[in-house]
Length: 315
Image (cartoon, rainbow, N blue to C red; front, side, top):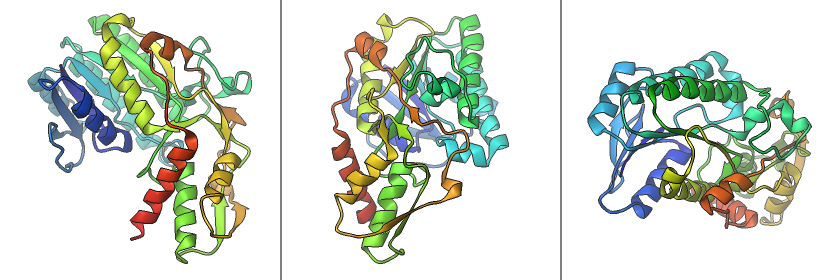
């Protein structure tokens, strides 16, 4: 197997590469591409490729001749996409279109990392939608992901290239950027513990519920996918998550129980999403049935690891 991963330097990308190196057959070849140079990783070749450079991307694909591609390169967070809408559209759509055109002449299978945020307004009716629910995105991130799904459906189907779409919910883990809520809470608590910040936690909407699951469980889902590729239909769309919605207040309370620090909590307007719905989860039962995968890491274990990493970063 020859596996190419775009967005290799991202939070998920690096972890997926480590999982592929560990779990794929020893004769597999793995290529990670990213806009920036990456630290070495045994068993993985890295290549600097700007996804906006269609010629360079096509050349990299043609030279490597992948059998499987995980397309992760995109702006990862809803907040980042909202702050830079023009760049978000260019990064997600142009990068995806360039990759689709590069793969149109290959025999590779593409796995596209979409997100459960594509459901948007549909969450108001069904907090845990399955794949039969029509996306109604209400954020820039949700809209760009939905558009990318259509791009792949059009370009790759016409070219006869198989592709699959994963719509994960909120995967979390140590080292995630503080633009994400769990990492933000853990980072603030760690700084308060060290006396590096006032004892006041800045938060958004604590009543908002999300499906949080560990990034290691998600990489395990990707590995399971590699083992079931032949059994999954072309154009298949799958939700991936825990199936449980946890309010942010529950995350905060769990982290509070893990520290001796005392602090107040203040809601800050710029941390509240305008289009936020009360509960955003997903029904992952179709993916579980198709692959035999299920999440195994308890949420408290994930939170403990995230807080420990936030503390370690402070020295």
